[in-house]
Image 1 (cartoon, rainbow, N blue to C red):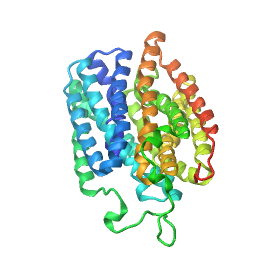
Image 2: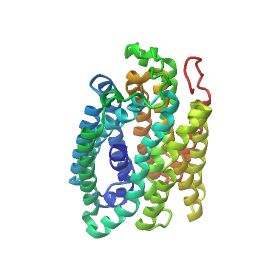
Image 3: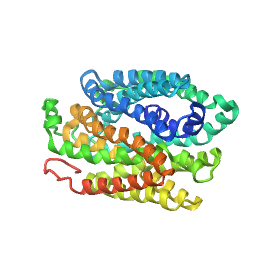
Length: 394
């Protein structure tokens, strides 16, 4: 589900952007604006998607979100102007927000706290698989279909995501009890681990100071990583001297490097604590963003891609685990939706800021340096999270 909701719906834009930008005659600010439109749609549904999943069950909400996302991608491929593309990218974001947040919240129902970070880490590898697939496939489609190659890419993304919607409604289940199972890692006698917070009303989520703190830390990731991911291929082609196929190979390498990152850092967070793991990840990503700007050579680009890949989706995995730790299985989707609101604001701002900086300075280097600085702020914010005695793993 993550492969479709994020991998294709969001990161597909990274590889399609140079051809789409040329065909629609967009400047960098408009290119960033399309990414922002997508992320505004994601933001709009991230909060309500979690609440709907808590009330009606993740399976229904995830399926509906993937259907909406597929429609948005198909219409993006048919767009003839910036305004049309922005509208349909926003619709795609709505579908992404409605499906991805409940997917990650589902981990809290299926896994006990001591397995939750690892489980969320496995789930986010869907984004890595998308990078691995998109790197070689998109350049080939662009070459095959030439001027309409970017449209063909969006149509393909839509078809795959539609198929994933069918898979979601067929395979997903809201809770282990639907199959006569118990959450993996539950107490040895089979009794569910205590979760008094499950009895709290939803308003408790929004009144929680620590959830607000987690949200601000999450916003730093949204702002910084989306600049890097949105303009990765554009920067390599426009300023790094890369051909589209070569940029695709580096994008694929980053995908391979990221394949186990969520699993690795989710497990680390289970061991050393959530806030320490997040701080380490932010520092590594700050270095990756800085290298991309300050060492514009094949060696620098490759090292940057590998460093980012090794940590790419770990923050969402850890935050999903934190939400489950603090709120329990029933409220975890609502809590994750709440902090994703902050994440979404950061994401929505990042591409537009980066595009404006690039048009002003005629380079994306300042934008990547800003991303590095914000990642450092995320590390500091992570370390300032105050642990609570009744919460395990934080």
